Image (cartoon, rainbow, N blue to C red; front, side):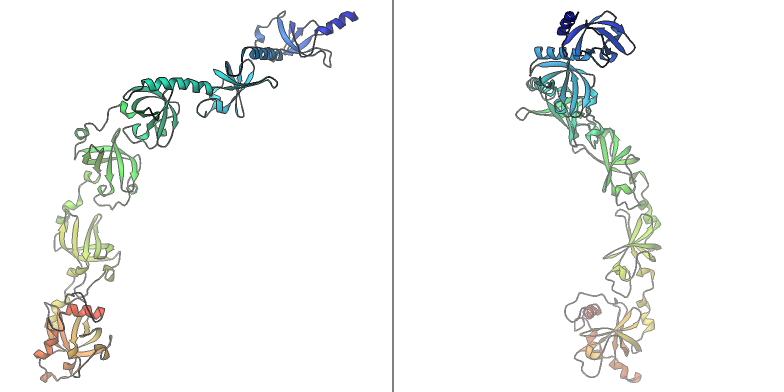
Length: 560
């Protein structure tokens, strides 16, 4: 018996594969007899097809240990299969060979592939392009190229990318040999950028530019395309030297701009959706692939639109009128305000010349003030029509924004959308009553308002100035006016000349010293007030008073 036992031990070596017989299939284990003095238990999960297993079946198992703590043999069905598979892989495959396997797991850096044994597929070797979701490949059986076999570590590294690249090289040669401009080919969206999409034509990528995706507006290629999408595209251009292919998608359908004039004639009404807003206007899609632009100036008759976004928003439906069409440049000019009645068409009727109207000062320019008469209808008061008596250099000298003013309509130009208004015309002209208020020889009192080299201006009342020539200041010869008179000084003088037409009043200070019965107006007294002599006009005289001695611009008599 001892000799027989020793012989039995020699037939069983730990780590070797042995044959065994299934004695019993239990709830969680399978009892196996390998002809040793004791049996072994193998967990059911080690059997891939335990449902088909029967008592008495012969199986191969790996002898891990002859005895465990309970005296039973330790066996493994999985390790036996793994060892057999390794032996098969090593005997049938070498590095560089093609092997088929199922992707069964995902680990950091790649995938696990079952090729009989577990092999590693690095993430960089999965495909020719980065794989966004490697989990989508789980359960697929594919071909791989063996990059490396490490027998000691029982490790195999695979590559699917190299197989795909080899296949693409062959496909690329075939594609370049037969591709021609105008062909239609099937491709798959491989990558999307801001400027377009790259389409896999099975062997080579072609560029589908954003402008060739659709006849209509495409804000971004991803709005209409997706990775993996299959498309029918047209070959637009082929550069064999640089191996570049340009593709078109919109060319697969008719150009909507053909016959555009007949479908949307000028002055016709259209309805469309706002697809884009710019500060200067809005783009309206009136049919698929056809957009028109409404400039801010064509959005309203009455509202002052600064930006298109102030009145419109993307997605809003609007009605417009076709103003012009440029088929070559694929541009349509639209107008929204033309769908409504133009209030300026009745402005001349509502604001006849000579009518007194009230409005609100809205804005200033250097030459006048804009007065809002009604929403969208402004009139303009020129600085020359703001005062009968003063020279207005800027409207802010008389008005301020928000003032409500009474004016008179001077002119209406509906075509240019302009109304000229007069502020002074709504007031009485003080010079109209000069003859009634002042008489030749009358003594008057006033205040020195301004000095000039030739004389001084005396303010007699609001808006009415008279001029004392230097020769009429004193009986003594006056060399410089400022040595005798000062601004703000009150003086008495006599009226020696009145000219309502030219808006002039001539005064003499020294004549005020003469008795009334002795006063006479002579030529010497008026000499300094005649045009063409020292005093050209009261206007130029006043300008000289403002700017000092020297050159001055012409000044209209009567302006202050």
